[in-house]
Image (cartoon, rainbow, N blue to C red; front, side, top):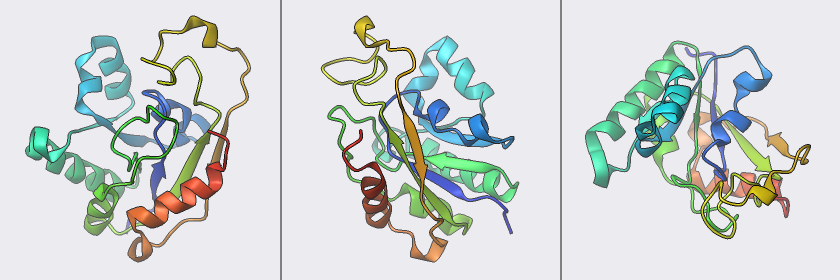
Length: 178
């Protein structure tokens, strides 16, 4: 049985996987599921591939890639690695949570492990967010030492995980601090 859980986080930036990465805080390997479009930019692609990111796409764009992403996530869990997913399936352009989608269930159906909800805090409105337009276009938002947070909730057993339940828990942890 796999030793590590799936991490489930809200999605504010293209670089959420680096800001919420457990490998930032622990000596664990983590496979983040990232939309395939991020892999089309050479330097960014190198960073995410080196970090063992798993390319994913919506079924309407590439159903085969979607299934491969779920398979790779399950394989990583079986190998004892940490896997993280952004259940919203997209980056927010409002700072609010979009509805969590069912991909998380698809992963844990293949490899039943607990899921740890994560809430990113203080990133909305930063240089890297989409507040007021495209990300990384407002240099005045580069604020050194900006206070940010990452909150983790208790693990949810695989058989109790629902997208709606995870979204409620992430929203509770975030509160008003986007």
